[in-house]
Image (cartoon, rainbow, N blue to C red; front, side, top):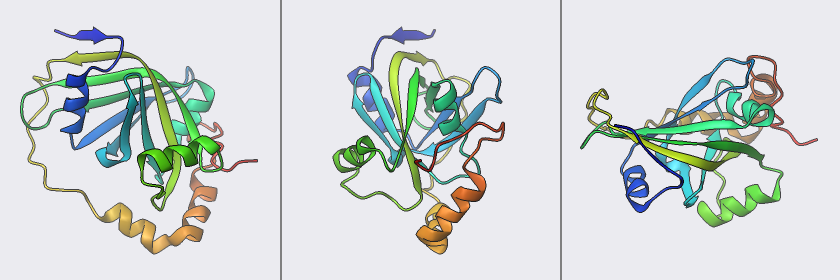
Length: 184
């Protein structure tokens, strides 16, 4: 039932635009596998073989560490309402921190020049395989809206508090891998 494609097609982009959430999965050969839910508003499709998303402050910084060490990244979307389907984007990713020129260019091009408070990096996925599958096992949910918790946390911490949090919690992965959240 699964179908594979070398790049995103219009029907895939349409499906992605209708979703409310996506998940990222990454690992190195020797690390734990990390799976994270992400807000769909942070994602942009650059072209048929490139996706980017804002990587905002979290309890860990596993994806960035995995991108530096290995680069393998999968992004998954699954329909929780409407017709069932799962769509996965496989490829190699990079973590672009806020000191890199490409970070600023992508913020300008895709996010109106505004870097949301708490944005640590932009994760850029170079897609080498798109796969769709039935999604019959995904339960139905009623979308109620985005949580305000993350925005409130960022606002309460402020830029200096967020930086202190990054210094304490986001410099290394849980497996001790560097994240390079701060440029040298």
